[in-house]
Amino acid sequence: MYSKQEKINIIEQAAAWALLVQQRDLSSAEQQQFEQWLQQSTFHAQAWQNIEQLQQKFQQLPTEIAAPVIKKQRTYKVEVKHLLMLLATLPSLLILYYLNSIQQWSADYRTTTGERKTVQLEDGGRILLNANTAIDIDYSRNSRSIILRKGEIWIETQHDVLQRPFWVKTPQGAAQALGTKYLVKIEQQQAYVAVQQGAVAIQSLSGQQQYLSAGQQVYFNVDQIKKVEQLHPQQLSWTQGFLLVKDMPLQQFVERIKPYQKGYIYLDPALQQLRISGNYPIDDLAKLYKMLQHTYGVEISHYMHGHWVYIQKQAH
Image (cartoon, rainbow, N blue to C red; front, side, top):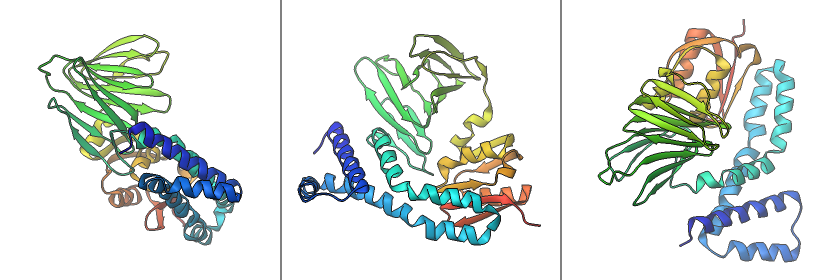
């Protein structure tokens, strides 16, 4: 049985072999070394198989996705040309993505695209993981810590008989619960905290501190904590299975639904600033897309069993 760090090392080795194979043919000696590496354990073989599956999935895209798009929309030849150029580089990009995702994939708990998960804590608390989220749980005699590696979580804490402090730690800093229900999210190079009940004490990595009470939210990065704002209810709507939006640009809305859409979403640039409002189900994307079509008159096409979504203006 490998430790977590040993598994990470094996995954890194698999990605290194894949990059080498992508660049050139292996020499006889290298081929022998690779086969010996592959046969070391079932985990070695599984790590290699995961990379191969990623490559095979995207190698199919030009014929199964790009060709139908070209045939259907000749006015988008420039965009499709750029897409095909990108697809040609995907094997290497996927391997680099694989390397970049190692820390998330080795987490104690994680979710994939379109998945949400509830984790019950040993002290009676509860954590809800949004899609594409990864956490570690570190409970000791002196403290309770949740390490948020990626994504977004909703936390409901419970009284601890040992009176240990409860922390959510991110690369930007930490948020200590003071008897509360709250949300923590990593968004690019900053973290976001929203408090629905109780209070939270925030500390950035640089040492800045901020107290949040119920109904407040704030963004912070490594260096500073930004201005405290009133909590926007739509930030919490995903915990109920919906995205609540009001007067939101369609481009921003598409970014919000990407964690739930397996595959790729292409948005016609002419629609990027279209303002939309409503309550959209994230567990039923087919219904979500129908709502967009019916309310705003956009045309939405699906390819590759729904893994490619194409949003454009309706043809007249």
